[in-house]
Image (cartoon, rainbow, N blue to C red; front, side, top):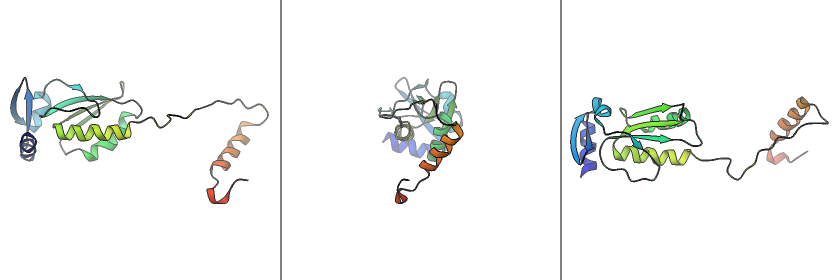
Length: 148
């Protein structure tokens, strides 16, 4: 019944906060101040009921890019703040909202370079501008045209 109560309260401008084993209802505007101390948010973790703060460190995606992905998905008065110095997100919301956001973060915060390598090759017999043009031409070839 707690998730239903949280939804009803949210529709009426209030939130349910669980602190020290007790529940209290507060206006949505002051919920961030009254919420328990922020905890680490990890995708896939079970989140207890109640309005709360989560700090989520990102490993592979910049916080501003993730903020652009998350904000349209969050309810209107949810909190998504960025900490660019540490590449972390500050999130506030109900347990269901936070679980959904953490799942979305897990989808996008991935290492796209896993299994790939990068190399630096010094050019000795060709001008860099000519090589850049050749690489651009090669990469712009359409698969149906084949190779030169």
